[in-house]
Amino acid sequence: MNAFSRRGACPALSEPMQTGDGLLVRLNPVTGGLAPNLLIRLGESALRHGNGIMEVTARGSLQIRGLSAESARMLAAEVDALGIAMRTGMPVETGPLAGIDPQEIADPRPVAERLRAAIEEAGLTGRLGPKVSVVVDGGGQLGMDAVGADVRLDAVRADAGIQWSVSVAGDGRTAKLLATVDADAARDIAVAALRMIAEKGREARTRDLSERQLASLAVWRSFAPPSVLPDISPIRGEIEPSSPVSPISRAERAQHISTFAWEAPSAELPISPLVGEMSGRTEGGAVERPRLPIGLFNVDEGTALGVALPFGSMPAQNLIDLATKAAELGSTEIRLAPGRALLVLGLSPSACASLQSTATALGFVTSPADPRTRIAACPGTPACASGRFATRAIAETIATESPDLLDTSLTLHISGCAKGCAHPGAAMLTLVGDENGAGLVVDGTAKALPAGYRPGYDAARGVAAIAASVRGERHQGETAAACLTRLGAAGIAELYRRNQ
Image (cartoon, rainbow, N blue to C red; front, side):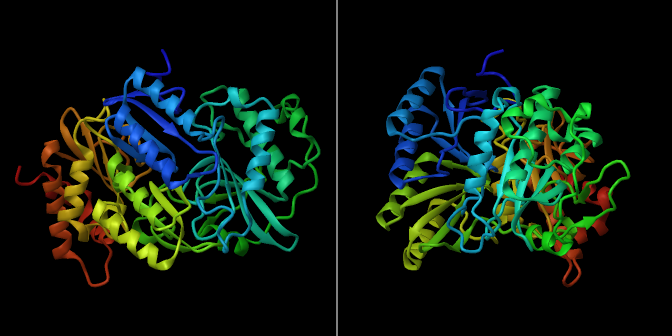
């Protein structure tokens, strides 16, 4: 199986991935962003060599779709000629405002760079699977709480100054906290965790580590340089527990990450696991929704404007037009942001207002209240060969016709197949395609058994019926999710199936 067809791989520029509409490449600029003129040039390349569709992923990568084997090579040559340095190796991700956010606890970029170097020095890059990743989060206006990772380093304020909380296997709410240490020790713990994953094979993730391994990581101290880590295996007991690290208070942790439920550490596992809902779940208001990368943000020099691509996708010409207007208004950089968004830097407040108006006219999401922000939709047909219906066309219809259903309490997931790529966690409502049509899953994932079906082309009408019932049954001050809970799964499924 070659790189063009291998599933589960990351479609880098040198290894495009086959999809339903041709080859797909994913670009991650080293700087995290691009000058407006470079984004314009990439858009022009997408028009020449692809199908004219560009995307920004949930993790903030840029994708170009619809390439052939030959046009992918021409695209790669043009990117090389532009001199855009692309990130390679295992992802070590920082926030989109890293280094320029006056509200961040610490600039995460130096820690991330040292960690990248340590991973290379330890020889781990080629031994880890393509989905393994690390997040280094300095906090601030746009933290990385919503981004899942195998290892997380989160900056926190402590009596000893800036420390880094190291956790594994989750996002900012669900990851298990191991220790809170200085930057060097955090780096060493992260590399040791990655070493353990590598020993288990390329399919392994931190969720596969045993309690004993996690316990060894929790008491790891910075006594061994990363270059010797491959010779040390906590599985075999070579690492003796050292004196416990000084944890930050629960209050300090809560200030940085949000709202957590804590449980007592296991007798076998000296770790304080963070207990949270499934990734992406916000129904019922149990956990505060992270701030979306949409709107105005104060940065060290001027103001940044955030706009999102609806469902992560936009015609390349629209991106070209946006970048052209940004350049005319004096923008110096456009950064890619997790949450399928772009952050335009170097603007005055008046320039932000002008660009925001242009972005709205071009179809970008410019308000956090836009109902499209409550819908997670995969590419669907024809872009994905596994898709059973046109997910994003249905999503647009639902956002237009049933916006009152999509309040902040609810996520609607529209998945062309049972893989659930756009939203792996549970959602209050999920539309999923299979051989029977568009199935409805209530409070579950795309992999769950649907409670009811209707034809894929008609799925939006079924959701409209649910929205109408919520509109009539909703109590004053009640969220859509709470109302749906009262209606019950059977009642919701019946509403969805009616009038076919």
